[in-house]
Length: 155
Image (tube, rainbow, N blue to C red; front, side):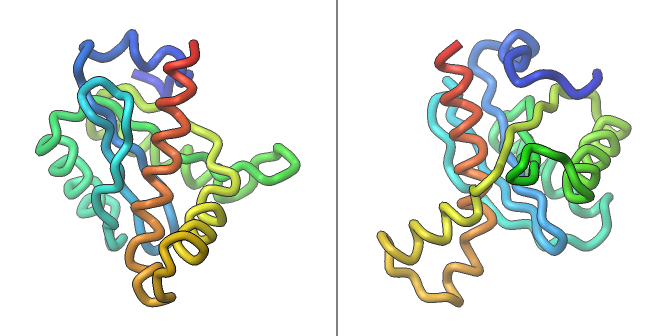
């Protein structure tokens, strides 16, 4: 199955199948999961990146534990709308996942997600810098996934 347009994702999944959201960083992968109705995203875990096989093994374990059957990956588009090396890396990650397991994967524009999460954690939650580093990636994955879920609700 190729990477799909976000709007096609629901038609490729059983009605009550959660999806996971990923915030791909160079050193970590933030993971969030939706509820079964795909209405609410919740931050789940931050995977420390090592090797691709180990990273996706953990990702698949998280998916299996939540019965998630699809993936939304944050696409780090530049502010001017162009795609740079980080987008290419995210697209390559999706292609590599599809070589291991055939499942629907869609992308969601993640512009400003990390900045918004950091601002929220500083301004609203008053979380220390050290604690922010622990939660920002999975929180950004939740932000990305919630944005995609909200878009799907408004189709």
